[in-house]
Length: 349
Image (cartoon, rainbow, N blue to C red; front, top):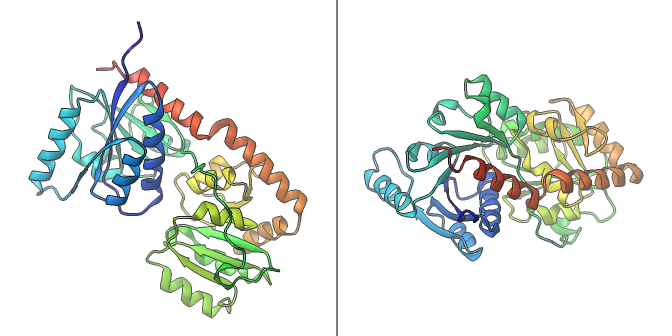
């Protein structure tokens, strides 16, 4: 006799846009397809995300996830959670974790995608860290190691076509590099712009928006790079951009996992990254990418130039990274790891 499907509620109170929010849709949709799981998503009322999940067949319900004073919404959320009667509840990030109480009726899991303050997650029964560094952060903070599991992210594996290489008035006869992410000081796009001064004739597509946008544009003008840098704003087609560019670069000062690393592997765009937390853990230097010291513009430029100037190195990095992804970071392998984890903790209460 086999067990019935495990009822799992996935809770997200994230923003309208963001990497974690995009991965939530990918993972929950993948879990829904797994025969051992019955999944429901309880998320903030972003219509596009609710629609994406429902199109994937996931039962989805929206809430405001307001402040602690929003007692009506909190009551409605908890009522819906109780009505679903989950065996396991997994929360994503701080607001969802604060909204979701521990209960004898289900096992509570908090998923951490960054080095967050642990007090907001201490009431959970188990924790998922998307990198080994984040798992260590939790054990160093006093969480029991036997209740922490490491499960990384997988990429958006949907097949995409490259966009025209001359998009955004880009010269066809020059090397093209791509960077993407929130325009925040942690992402160190200022260092990347300094690196570009060491790379004559190279064009940069910078996809993203954020608080550093005006500072980065001012620095771009100061360095005389305006003719070679394209600020693309927030994009939903980063994987298509990867299919177009010659190289992807991740210059971050701080990067919890760097899911963008897995995107570059899956879409066969060689990567150069700084040795920040996530990329430094996942990338094997010279195999699945090249690593450089944090805040070292010259070293970053040297590594990028080495890939752009050697087709042999570029092809080696592409193939090796593709193999690494297929053997440990693919959708099929990550969904199965979650399913096995849920099975292990199913009867823990």
